[in-house]
Length: 223
Length: 223
DNA sequence: CGTTGGCTTGAATGAGGTCAACGGCGGTGG
DNA sequence: CCACCGCCGTTGACCTCATTCAAGCCAACG
Image (cartoon, rainbow over the protein chains, first blue to last red):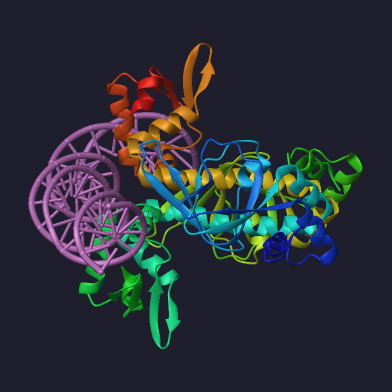
């Protein structure tokens, strides 16, 4: 049991309510793995038998449609986890997980996890909490894509990611515009055009380094 | 503890692995409620504090987009449950639940459920299993809507709901075409047209009572 | 028997996808 | 250090799929 494993477990929200002794048990079955930028953590159709918890770095979860088009499902930041699907249903992955930067992942095998869950029921509560918000996000996403225009979706995305920075409202895109397009269920071209439109209307200002300054949030949300 | 409550609990997959004694504990905190066709079980923005398990009947879960458009999220049949979102996150419902026919629902309050979960950790496993497949369904839905054409989505839907009936491949639509349109993220008009197209091409045959006979599944899936 | 809601069909419109070309930036290797 | 390459992002032109609006039909139901 080395220090990297220790760190990888204690950082994680789903375990941070356990006492040191219990944490030891978790650590005993957790394995740390590191990935280079661009490396795949898992692929669709691979059978999965582990829960993956992000310790450091950033992961892109995406799906491929039959048509070959790629759909960005979500991004994982430190503390987030994935792989729970195939953990409870013994199926294969339906999505791809790719390291966006150098990433450290903490892995717990199905059998070990199930033992932990029965022994420490409160972990389940944390996981269910996380899963329920993921269901919500995903259902919202589905509704969104099928009922709102690209314009409205982009506006909502901006609004949801806004942050106050020395008096200015700004958004720092957590991904490339290409990925944003995929996430919003559209194309890079359309995203580019919509950003330009917003800028022409004086609603936002595009700055370098994926930064957007929001000039008129109210009007943005009326679209 | 009356017989309706008993039935309402024992029928449910998430509890059916418990022994009789444990089931008694579950029954002690479960309340049965009945709803008429068209009655609402819950609405968006209402705070939720219960898990709802369908005992008899059928429930329509849908969302309203800001634009006012309705999106059918899923249907609940006996044994299915809903309400888990607000159970773990203390938020309000984001969707509407409406009884499609006379429906009996079994209700367990948040506090009672959490107690049960800690006491009988295996219930959590069942719930997580269900939640994980719901995540999968929902993410697939989102991907689908944003990457495949209406035609392809409808074809997939048909394929997924196909059943062998005395030598014929048929699909019995579990909902109105209007709802199907909403589920697939399109309009009733488009659904109607696509069905007609499929029929013209000799791929399917529309029959009364929401029955579709599938004549050429292979070609349908090539679309 | 009238009303209601689901379903179908037509015609017009438009949002957004596709295709193509190009500028810029960052990484890589000579 | 510079040249090249590849990918991202942008813009224009075109086109298509699906929505919208409108009208009529049918079956279920009060």
